[in-house]
Image (cartoon, rainbow, N blue to C red; front, side, top):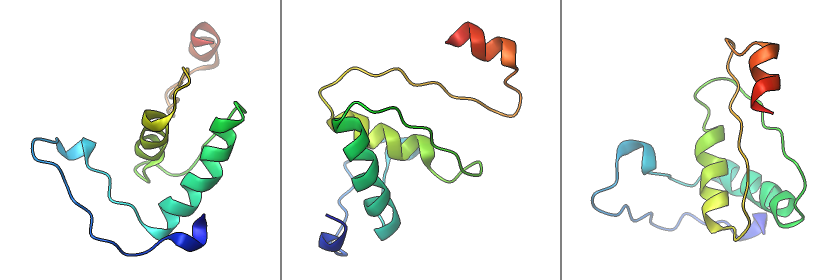
Length: 88
């Protein structure tokens, strides 16, 4: 629940790479709650935001906790329609 977020200490395990470190914020907590609802109901999700805002990190944290199998597609500005069709 979004209202349950607090500023608890974040413990970072030894040996993690920089890209594996995830520090929760009020915003990521809120978005996670919404996305987890979609994941639990097996509904498709489309995330869009500027580069470097943590979309992939957020969804990976959520999917790690899930018992379901998922397909994840990543598109960039260089992804052409034909490449997207091949991936799908």
